[in-house]
Length: 425
Ligand SMILES: Cc1cc2nc3c(=O)[nH]c(=O)nc-3n(C[C@H](O)[C@H](O)[C@H](O)COP(=O)(O)OP(=O)(O)OC[C@H]3O[C@@H](n4cnc5c(N)ncnc54)[C@H](O)[C@@H]3O)c2cc1C
Image (cartoon, rainbow, N blue to C red; front, side):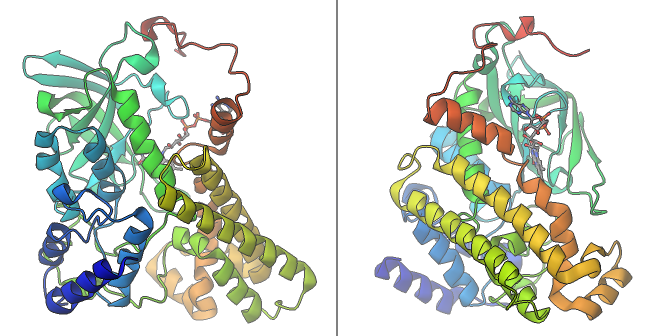
């Protein structure tokens, strides 16, 4: 990281970090000074640093044992999308609350009939005076129950081909006409939700990037999603939650700081740190000298580092440096997730199949296997990596069609108006 920026950051942390500040007060300082999103434009709460320097900033904040920048989809997806496509008024309205963690965001893209085929969303937005009236259903909306805002993809013109009639809205979640219903997952948790939109509204100023131009805007959101979720993209996230509803803003910031060495309780963090964590497990189980285990560990180590270096290369050279790199990274991450799951389970043996569904079970399991209680959770979570942000099959389709130039699907529907497309039911 550039020495000057590092010195500025160290000075800022030394003078401003105080564990007795509230989370909201600390994020206010961090965000306004440009340290929550240091790779953003300095005119809009950034410092104009590269993405890899942005990762170094996050790690330096953690090393200082200060509370990291707000996690969640605001900084990761909504902010970069608004910065790329928003008007100055929109940037003024939304970006400050994102870098200071005041408002949290969810992603209202997927629908029961549109996941991989995202351009097929049928949730409709109809202009009525100076606001849009929105009706439809979204699904798999992570954290919708605690988010203030949603990145909403809705159909504003059904008479043109499907990619051409969509718009992207900055959508207020807390309003009449929005019902969020939790879905229970096999982990016993409810991260996902169904979101029902029944005559919900969005003001005209909430439409980003132009009417019917939402596909281009959504592509920016998705590119940031891939970059953020791959092996090279995961940075030090905060344990405090952004937004008014999560209830953390008024709490003491110091209560959310943890040892910078390790973050437990997070399957994605386990997968991101797969090579080190699984090697540690092999040593602990007395299997580190087993040649077959060593071979699998070497494979895992190689993949993790390939992913990391690819991520760094992309951050250093911009997203166009290596065509398809985001898709390749996402596929690598899926592979790491599966290998991490399989090898961890085989090392831990039958204990790895235990999963705690309540606090007592959690304590009992942790007493037996310590940190490796996370193996069961990782095993349940690993399949998610090959689905979110676009499934493995979709990444391969993109690579084959757009990077390798292979023939496209013969039933290309790009010229057919959305209204005339065949649909189930
Ligand atoms: C952990 C997690 C968090 C998520 N969070 C969110 C969120 O916050 N907001 C949100 O909007 N969505 C979210 N999603 C939803 C996710 O984006 C979708 O699940 C994903 O895009 C796949 O869509 P689908 O579930 O409708 O499956 P489908 O599109 O129905 O696909 C089913 C199967 O068919 C295959 N398939 C489909 N089309 C093709 C094709 N053309 N060629 C080859 N194979 C194909 C797929 O690969 C898949 O295996 C989340 C998903 C997960 C797992």
